[in-house]
Image 1 (cartoon, rainbow, N blue to C red):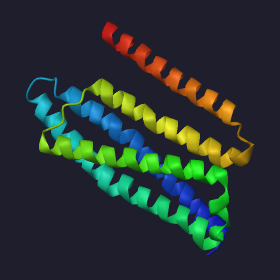
Image 2 (tube, rainbow, N blue to C red):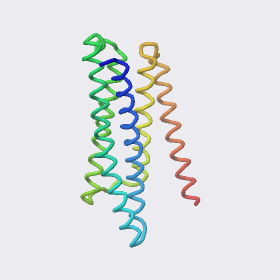
Image 3 (spheres, rainbow, N blue to C red):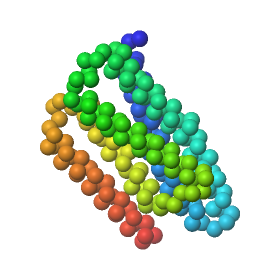
Image 4 (tube, helix red, strand yellow):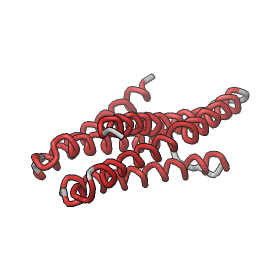
Length: 180
């Protein structure tokens, strides 16, 4: 199969994987905050959010993660051969993809806890976890696009700045919500 088709499929499933990861943590926030409502709104909202979470994770996020990884590894080993594995930038990308998989699996664990009624995390915790997907996305894209031209120092400085801006934005949003 043509490399461009494989690359396009890889990108499509990476995008849908991240879409699922961004949305699942937002649904976790909504689920927890629905628990603070009075009945019958609490039960109705939590049942609806749980249904949405299950459909999202099992219907979109998991299949997208598997297919994105499949097409990525197919490009690395099936189309390019083992030459790519010697590239330092690829080691960084694969390390962050591994961390992304751990993040994804942790989301599954949270979903299981919510389903079982044993989740004790706050909506603020889920807001912070939601931003972690942004960090993964930014790092992976910059590493892939810039490859070996990425300066370690500027890359690290940029990552720290992105994380600081995200944390400040979360803090500002929390203050804004408390005023309302």
